[in-house]
Length: 355
Image (cartoon, rainbow, N blue to C red; front, side):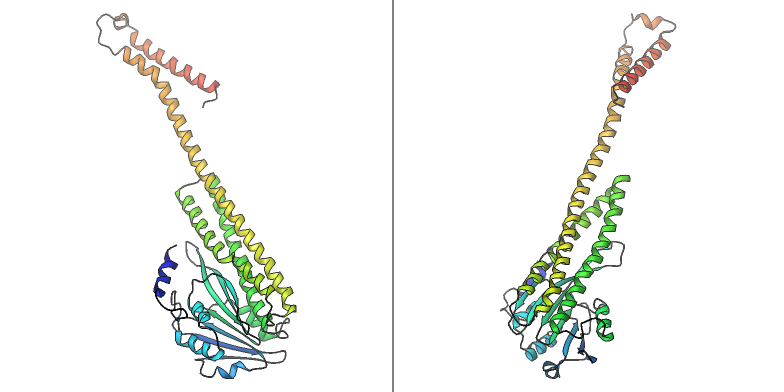
């Protein structure tokens, strides 16, 4: 939980707008993919740098610039100089611990989102990465921490010309990117739902220390998920209310659909949090009941042996004149008496339903 604070300490004392990468370097080489399209044409290129970025600004087609890897400060500075982005925007792009938000700069809109993915390991934790987008009049620039297949299906749709994305503008492209990210949330929540089902089964059958660890692990994941998803509702709502001409009225309908999906994701996360809280209470109750059952058995055993111990103590006293000491059947009679007392107590406990 303290890791983001430690990361932010790298910028302590620096002036606003200072470009410092805060986060892990997840790729060695920055990849710049440029996709230009309209209703009739589609062109895709890979750039090594932004030396010729000025040629991308005034295109009549919609331009999608996808940047994988955000640790290169020189690349971000060149891009900001080319498109006239505010230094604070570039600073936020380099800071991978940003809260999801939307900022309107009149000529462009800056959006920060969180993408969820599953880690292929025994722990199966959920990874959270930052995606930044800059939406202009005829371009969208997306920034990812590393190269993934997150938008692969969307790229295939653009290449094939399926749907209306080639007929719409940059605002619809931005909506499509948002929709892909929100849809990924449902995939992650479905996986978490399956883990909750297995955990609930273990909780009912044989709860142990591993069950408690899994409950705490999932509760921690839910905290991070809520922190990453909850502000997304404000982002989508702000895009709907944006007065700038960058978001057309035709796109507002689709943004409302994404907003509804966001609300559904948030409600699902809150439901899972409530289920986990209930599971923790059930675990503690089951452990307490198991301890009570053990203590009940031990108490019954101790209670049965109390009169037997008393009888053994009486006849263990070293007095010379005890009538049973000289009796030939004294020892068997005492054992039979002790057995009778034990059986009588067992019958009494059974009738009282104490065992």
